[in-house]
Length: 360
Image (cartoon, rainbow, N blue to C red; front, side, top):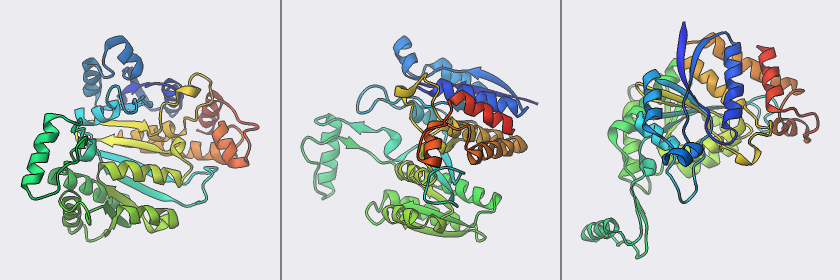
């Protein structure tokens, strides 16, 4: 069976690591018809938009995509392509496994966490208003009419929508995953002690869904306490489910427990479409130098193969990556440094990719 997959090279090191990923996936023997789709900064320069409609149509036609990192300007410029893709295809579940790997350089050796992040609302909905805008003035009037302290002059404003359907959907996805994969516990993370309506709604939905899964332990934790607990003893956690903003922050924290974003895969899953991606940035400063670490992209591709029901190939990929890292003789500089404290003996992206393929 041949699967059709949209391949989004991305910006910076994206083309290098997606090229490496494609070579490894092809080496598994799984039949993939790759269809390149270009988005991001270079497309913005040529076409005036980083995400043209034809790119959306191409992804929609196949329903499965894997992408390299795409640059998002900080504080100005175009909005995040990643966020736009999630909204365009209602990719409501961001799934990020964080598992210890040989040579990841972490002080922990047995981390095995899975983060489910709601992906479409919260502060990432992008409902923002500039200081002095009529919208800020109108909202200030509503706030004062409700007997609350008004908005300070000169304030920008972001709105935080949290809905019952989206909260229920992401918590259900977390519990379904836990049950299907023999996980022991789901932890809902929130700040409902302060944001009683928005985070309070998320927590109520989590408790409601949890009652339908008596075979899975459930707890809830305030986000700051959860962060402290993850650093102190990650073994206290198993599957975590969070609203969008906390999910973004906590998933990066958990990646730090297993060596960093260079080793952290990710998936954005909806009802009709899924997009897989390495979760790190585009690193333009090292682009084209054959030194980028493609491990996160490899592991994201393994998640994609699982999604395509190619489970044996997915497991072979993960084992080949682990074997290459454990061997430690043909790894990129960041991994070599974590293993030995020095970059001496490190190899480039291409040589590391060839070593993973050899272990297949």
